[in-house]
Length: 91
Image (cartoon, rainbow, N blue to C red; front, side):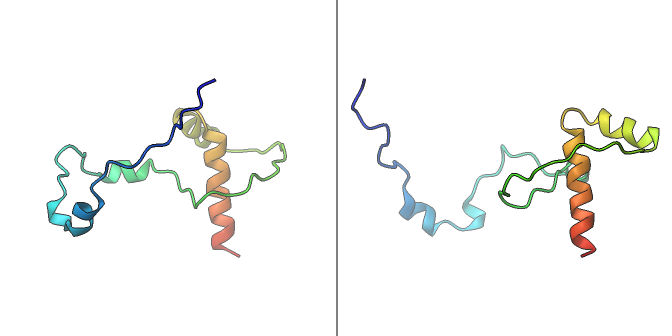
């Protein structure tokens, strides 16, 4: 086994970063965020404790389910997050 430490001292020039203004930051390689990107965003509020999930049978309009499935993997999690956001907004 290697006893050498895997952590190292930061090589970041924190003093220079502290003195920078927003205008000093080069964002040329960052894509502009579009309304379409926001539309596909998933709301996540911090790190939550894993909740116990219950399997249910739920009747959903076919076109609604087809749309969620077309969003790719994690569509059931997306549905759960939207239902949770609705629940929290109405408590």
